[in-house]
Image 1 (cartoon, rainbow, N blue to C red):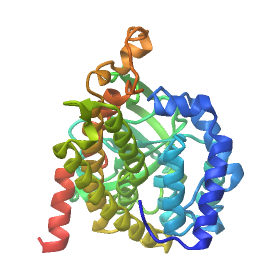
Image 2 (cartoon, one colour):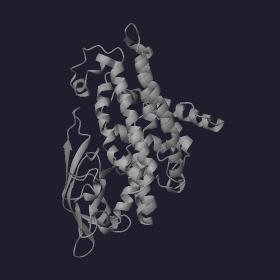
Image 3 (tube, rainbow, N blue to C red):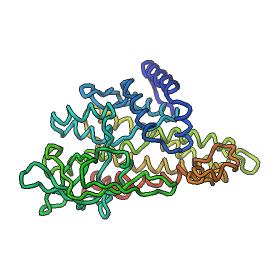
Length: 399
């Protein structure tokens, strides 16, 4: 993607590219490209590699141990990481919880949890969605009631779609602490140790046979009151702040750029009516449109990242990025599937079982179907696109 870069930016890109070439091992690269299941060791290893270089928390202020990159540096890093097929860093602690702690948490919470996040001593998962409280998150029912001594909250309820919860030792949760007020005004934000008695994690097996998401059940779980972030019953404010960061990350500019490059490669190799598919006017028009949309989104994304780096919470633009970013990524997935043709037919679960080992795949397109199906979720999680369009309309045109 053609953007104007200074000599300093170009030097930084060379530095990042050299780092990726050295640190992304062939085994790790092949797993990412092939949509293989990354192990916990794979993800923690990459976390440690970036932390050792000081590049793990690009948007954190330096006073908290972050890199404090500007928007162009973050954009360059994302581009090079995707081009090198580096693993994506698990975002729940670093990109979602950390901004909340830095803005609303106590000094003691920042001093304790942030260094542990950088060192990889805690793996966080997100306890937001519940059955009946997904996009309508304010209707959540998981409750937290203080004990008689006032030293602990007693938590009961259920969370669902908890991504990578099977690996986590900590979960940040939205809980209801007051049932007698407006829904949004009775929610609090708690940090909960997953080893606490009364917590049960139940896997949800996806189409590809992996437990990427889970249910988490709470039965009389005791949580120290010191693990309340900010004020009681103010959790909805913190939740909205966190979601603006999550939705900005979901835009996935780097992933879309790498995906579009892959589509072009496939389309140059696959033939249609005796010519490369890339020369088909209809297919080429779709590629051109998605590339134009991606360039516009990349510019908007850099502007939003600049605001975040300056300590401002992204506004309605994060909803715009979430909607447009997911549409673009799903369009690229569809173009890849169409370009790969019959070679996109083997599915990830078949590959795991060895069922497609004898099938030809000259384009290396086997993972295309798995990525297409997995990324249907993009327009749902982080607040469905329908909900985001409502937020955009309300903010920009008034209620």
